Length: 474
Image 1: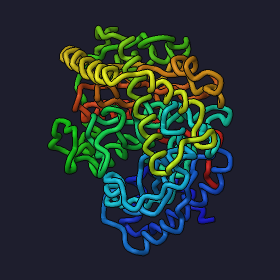
Image 2: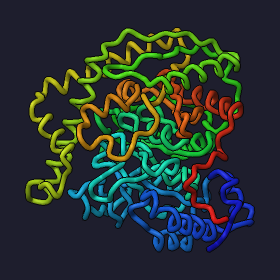
Image 3: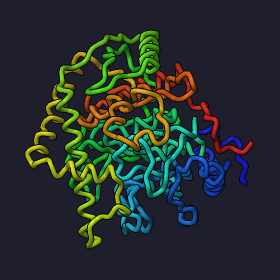
Image 4: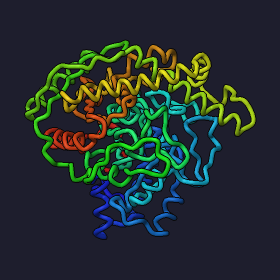
């Protein structure tokens, strides 16, 4: 065991500074991350692909001199292509899928200096807000092993929360960065649509709803990684408003007095639990104490149309992915290949028409216009990330159609509009489970969220919060 007990005192930028200053080597940090993985992963099942030898080779070959040089890093095992390694998408259909090129975003991670040593668990095709794929089994929450760490980036959130590393890759098509950040007590920023690349082949995920970034312990790590990975690539279908500065420079800046719209109601069916409502009220009070004006308000959108639109888009894209894989394999998917929920999405997609898909995209874009006008009056929207604290493992097994609206909050709205949205670990339940609060800004205004998040981080520090199941060596 390397026994670097001070590892937990540093975020990713802090670890990189140790390497830069010659106080520790990238090899020593990798050994620490591997040791911590081997200690805690049997309990939480967060890391499902291990690339320890490849990571050591990358260090020996020489790391780029980026902001995170030498820092251990994990990719999500969904959509992140790393040459010569399996990307399973959490599905038996892709258990042998080994790409021979990197995703553009992976190349940018590499240029940032991180050392990629594995991949994290996700639900099949990222379609559920819990991480319990048949292929690898459930990932468990370090705050309570009987609870979910969320999804679809549940493996990433569990690994960071358990102290394996301070930051990990995540992606968000309906809440999949913010949901696990809420469940695990982390920072989870979903950037503006198009802020990070989706290539080199794919142009968008889920009709532009999906985007990749990270979950992290600190706001500055998330901001700095956004600087390292943002920017266009050839053929991008979307281009967010250009930000001429550095997102990292926004950390610590005064956000000014903000006009905050307080969302107290859920979109569609279900409602927030009393405990979540209390957490929302406490956060509204905290915002007021910081000098912001908080007003209960909501835009006039069609909640039923939004629910239907996201269902059409997710079902159609899931079905398309399976059918493309069937074509490559030369056979139909069997029960061993895909899970019942995926099959249900495919059946659902078969009942939708091309016109249904076109209307779904129009609903998303129209709602983006409504939210754009709403933000002419309100700088930020505040709402709970989820309707309840992390649910038990198996909560979605019997009837996802019932479980989804019970657990989900309003995260999907901001995927559909493309706005930046962040979950921050500001509250806990009575049984000591994290409850995230979600802040969302106008399209393109990621910088405002970073300023506000860093203000809240200073007012309510969370970096040193540790769950009962943790990887450090005492």
